[in-house]
Image (cartoon, rainbow, N blue to C red; front, top):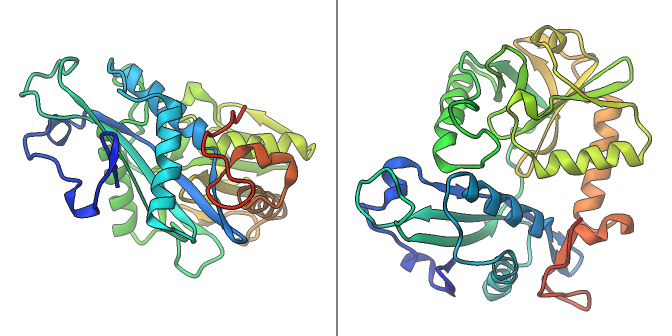
Length: 310
């Protein structure tokens, strides 16, 4: 693992039980994917993920002690040091360390760690899609907390909803926002398709600014598909033709039913299947148009200093 500026053995990357973040959730993190692409491994939108983590930290009034570039370089070096040649999940995390119990943690030291490990699928139940429910819990957000921050403490909200859905026999949960409109999953953004029009909630619904969401929106526009960002009422979930989740871990995942009501035919729809296939081509480097999203770890296309992903 990479821990506070150096690569250390996995078992040595430890923290004290008095760590501020353990008690108060005072940290921010990212989930990043890397994919096996031929003989190489490519990290998807590395710079954009690190940028979002830096912005999340700023929302909670602490600055990271490393730059975007330093963390990108560290991520590539970590993968190479482990000699990984498989698809991976990468977890950078920045958190407040030892500094007492004061809730104002600005003066408390900030630690940063990056870990990577082999990873295939987040949802791996052998099904072509998910059966989900609308959670009885609402998505936390403004004015209570900055919902756009990917902060450690926020995810106890997702733990509640995901556990509730699993106990009721569902694969995943879907949050509504404080006004009762569709928000997002416990770790995914949502899109619906109705009469050929693709729709997804906007920031006013308290969603996280998903990197996979951004990518899929770019694909939709480049493919010339009808698309709108707008508020989505809960009732629309039960009459849409297709629905799917997007997320770093989930990728593009079809939704087969919501609250035991079948979505469309109950099978992955045409729009969802097309976007899923296109996304898989993008993240594995098979679509040259989007190669700028990729950081190559090995081989002739290697570049340690990650280029801009704009």
